[in-house]
Length: 215
Ligand SMILES: [Zn+2]
Image (tube, rainbow, N blue to C red; front, side, top):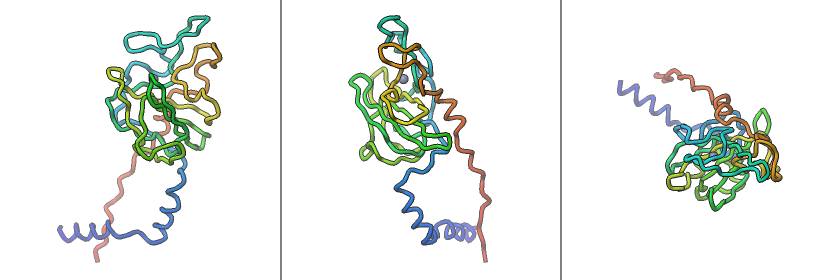
């Protein structure tokens, strides 16, 4: 049994062929296609707001209304319960935006090229990790930020926008139910983020048979 185990270890740690190493080095500088997505946190529970919820704090305080109609704006993303924790990229992509809001802390956008076109994933209330800035390539599951401390309001906001980063609308955490005050109507290009992630999850890895070749 020990001999088999050692033989397996030797096989497992055998260096890859030179050609394989060269290929890995050249591809690391480009974002791979984002065919699969995942949630940005290891747990995914609703905080107070889902996609399309009236934009309120947990205590019911309305965050924004249309000035004329008084209509309450609608939430473009999903708010997840979390403490100050690492935030992972939902898919392979490139950091396309970073902004800081005095109330909502940091906002970040990641641009993903998928078979269905360009997708932006939006993260609010986060601070980027050192070395992660606009233009940085990230891979699915890579930690690029941490949830910002907002005291009792701390949570992660995650949204999915179908389209490229061409207008400031991609930054919005909420939009009016009907266009008002110069803002387009909800949902604009935002889509329900949990359904998107669930329909784009990587297939579970199939267990590979234990490959050991003894002489
Ligand atoms: Zn939110």
